[in-house]
Image (cartoon, rainbow, N blue to C red; front, side, top):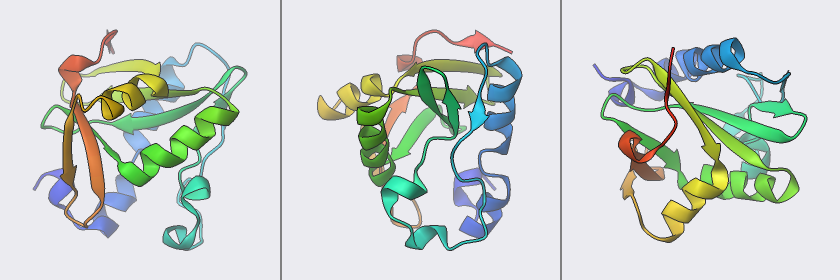
Length: 147
C-alpha cells in the first residue's frame, strides 16, 4: 500500500523522519530544530501559522523539509503553502525536498513554488482526507543532488 493511501495515524508515525534525516546529514550550514515534531498537543486545533512552522532555522533562512511521492510529485497542502508564505514575509523560507525513489534531494526558495502556484504551473487536487493541494512534478525542480 502506498504512503498516501495509508490511514493518517500510520502516516503520522513516519511522516518527515527520513527527509529530515537527509537534511540533517547534508546541511552545509548550522541549523536548529524549529518546527513542531509530533508534539503532545492536538496539532489540528492549532492555527495554521503555528501548525506549519518551518522545520529548521538557519542563520539566514527557515527550511521546510518535505518528501515527494512515488508518483514523482511534490504536493503541498494549500493551507500549508499559505502559512509558509506568511513565514516567508518574516524570514526567507527554503524548501528542502527529498526524493526517496531516486535517492536525491534539492533545495529551492518557497517563492519559486508560490510563483508556480500563482501562474497555475502545476496540478491541483485533494488528498484522501479532504485537504486541497498544489503539486508539481519533480522534473520541474532543478538542482537535484544524488545522495
